[in-house]
Length: 340
Ligand code: AFP
Image (cartoon, rainbow, N blue to C red; front, side, top):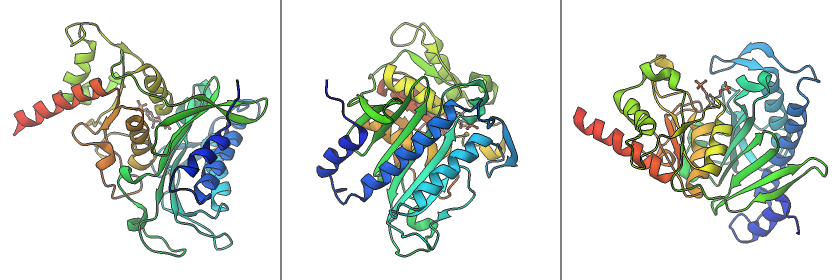
């Protein structure tokens, strides 16, 4: 069987779209090369003495792990030189990352989480890099304002993730379906392994951190109870699967069908909209889910319709198979109606 590399796939599809300038391909290629470098080091993390924490705390108030820091630096180093970006936003940086004077600027804006789920690194659990790509919506030149780059997730021109698991995979969409590529380490290429991924319309898995049950509102409790109940619409309890690494939980549900929830809770006023960040987690996953035939909401609204106001804005995320997400939306709507 002829094997298609991600670059070949990109070149073929680039011809079919308005991204035929080659700049988008350049951007994706830099992300892919960064992912290979990160993958190489993630798989050798224990040997390289890079496990553990740096001792610093990031903008989210979380301890920075050495691999987070390394992955962040790899992505910034490669992408600031690419000549296709006007700015970047990383989960690890408080502000927009500007392109240094020495490199040319372009009109794409990249938002990324360099190593999501990194609390799991030391235990060798799958983690990932998530990204969303937008076009600058105004302004020219080197100085970029937030207003020029912060946009609804629906404006993403592409979104994807790389999962560093038992194999390394790139899953991405440029707005015409979702494709998955597995890294063949012997040739150093991502090869098309999962063409045109479709999420099953209905699944058998629910994924949520149920330890927070007491901090949820009644709508969320009812929704989660629904999946645990043998009296739900298909008369079978769902299996609970929760890794605590969004890329891994999302990827499994994308392939097998199911629903992932990170709802709002009342543990911490700073996290009253849940924990996940709109730009680098919710919006990219929402685009992939929709492109694969699934859905993503914050309980009521479509994730892709939300207009973020800040780089590190958080949002509740309920994403996955259509039937399960619709069920949760219906429960939230009923509770909202009763509260009126
Ligand atoms: P870390 O990157 O700090 O490990 O956080 C991962 C994450 O943002 C996301 O990948 C998980 O789905 C979520 O947090 C898990 O959070 P809880 O531990 O609160 O369930």
